[in-house]
Image (cartoon, rainbow, N blue to C red; front, side, top):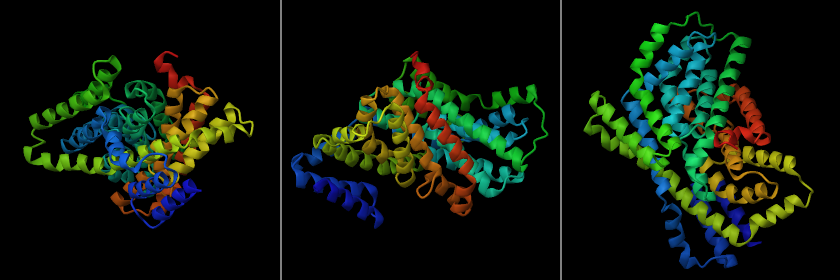
Length: 423
């Protein structure tokens, strides 16, 4: 009864528009007070310990790196290289836009930052190429889903922290699934473009133009190479890679006279605002998850599901369904911290590999960025272009279907997640 009342309080406060971390914090305190699961005197210490993690330092550093890439113009060069590589295809600029999202995802680790950065650069030209503005917004929003799916990813850092799994290992496992999601967005756009005739590129491939674009983008391409190369080779931890990437991007920007010392306060402020949103949620959600574990809620949930005779197939479908619905109504970070400890024991019960479970969870939650009513990427693009969010959501339906298919593939073909680990 106390647990049910706590959950009702959280839902009621959310409906009233109270910030999520406040809702979850008050609900958790009520649960602890009513059940005695943990002494209230330990709440302050537990909140501090929840965010006292070396891995979390990577979050503001990756956000800072992405901000520097935009302010220094390096992000534009990434898109220029993508256009030189794929602009000759029939849906050339749409494909280049999605590839630009993927390349920027290798730097920022954030969907919203990806959507905002690439959206500013590409929207006018997408409309000029013949795409309706609402569809162009949906394309960028969908491509930007790779922000948490292609390493480095803030989401994989958080789920690694919550479940005690190396984020470097998760980054390695997530690369192939992340690229698969990117390819799904590109193929979906190509199919929609062919059916509706939005864009018909007449440009041919030019090796000289491609080499010139590669040379122009060499410093921009160096950043993801440093991040991923350092992590995959074992030279850096993800946090160290984030620090090196941020320092490298700053040095390049200052040497090219695109970044000045006067820009530092604004850039640091951007990272601080992101952390100000993410870290309180992590702190209270970890405390909430700890309270549920002490009360044996995850184990009871597993027993309840298994009492229906559910096998591996049914459990995978159930988890995908739960994660899709949760992603529609709540942001990724609280979903990871709350649902991760709840679903992880269920996955273990039916023999799902921990790495496979993490990749499946993050990929499926990525759908939440383009599904109403939350749909953070939809809101970002709506605010950026002043386009009705309902129109963008309607055009995003084909991409949602494509990403659901990818989630099902990842769920039922574990080798997609484990192949890069040699399993």
